[in-house]
Length: 59
Image (cartoon, rainbow, N blue to C red; front, side, top):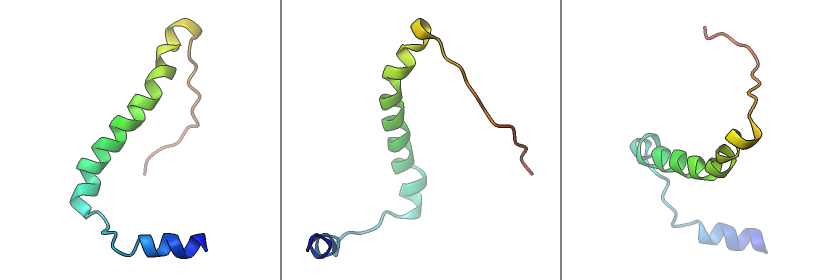
């Protein structure tokens, strides 16, 4: 039943265009993620931070 309700509510949804995805929406999402990370970043001076990466090379 929930599936049908979700499907019906999405009928009029218009997908964002290419330009808004790569500009406005991308910038807004990046800012949103930065806001979510800020409380964690604020603890780095007190607790420290370690970055671990796996090596790779670009073609």
